[in-house]
Image (tube, rainbow, N blue to C red):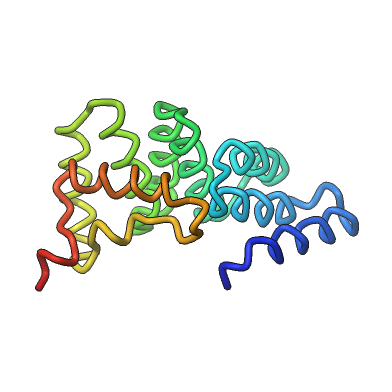
Length: 160
C-alpha cells in the first residue's frame, strides 16, 4: 500500500520462508508484481493464492482480474470480474477491470453500460482512477485509462 514494491516483494519472500503455502504470501507477491508492471507474474502468483484460498475476500479476485486483463487474458478477466461483482457488487475495482476487458474485447456497448453503473455507484470516479500506481506500470495505466475513456468515463479535466 505504501507503493514500495521492492519492500513488498521482500516481505512476500520472507512470508514464503515462514509459510510456503500461505495464500496471503502469494497475494502480496502477486499484487506487488502487478503494480510494478509485471501482470503475467502477478497473475501466476494470484492464481496460487486463489488455489490456496477457495473462499477469498473480493480484493483477491479483483487484483487477479487486473492481472488477467494486463496479460491479455480478456475473457478470463471478465469472468473473474463478474465473480468478484457477484460477491461484492459495490467494489469499484471489479467494475474497472470489467470495463477495461470489455473495451479491449470490442464489446463497447457492454463497457459503456458497466461504466454507467460504476458512475452511478461512484459518481466521483474518473478516468485517472483507473491507473496503476507504479512508474513501471505506466503502459498498463495508459491502456486502462484509454479503455475508461472509450467506455465514456469522465476525466478530471472534464470535472473542472
